[in-house]
Amino acid sequence: MRIVMSNPSPNPSHSIQVRYEDFTARYANHALVNVGAEEVYLDFTSGIVPDRPGTSLMPIHTRIAMTPAGVVRLAQLLAQTVQNFQVVQVPQGGANQPPAPPVPVEIPAGEPV
Image (cartoon, rainbow, N blue to C red):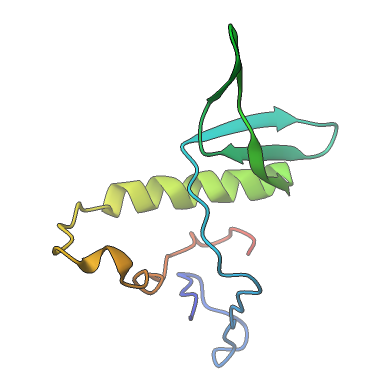
C-alpha cells in the first residue's frame, strides 16, 4: 500500500510500506473513549451480552492507546472517509471475498505524519 500526501516530501521518491502483522479482522459495534494523563484510549467491543439477570457485560476485545495529536489525525481521516463513503451492493456469495485494498488518503499540508 502506498500513502499519498498532499504536501511534497523532501525526498519525492520516499514511500511508506505498510506491513500487517496480524490481519485478523474483528467486528466492533461499540467504541468507548477514555482519557489518561497523556493518552487517549479507544476500547472496542462487538456489543453488550447478558451476564446474569439484571446485569449485562460489554467485553472489550481491543484497546488502542494514542496521543491526542494522533486522535485528531484519526478523526480527520474518519471524517474524510465518511465523506467519500458510498454504499456498495455486495453480490450474492460475495461475503467470503477478501476486503478491498486500502484507498490512499490525503493529509493536509503542514500536518505531521
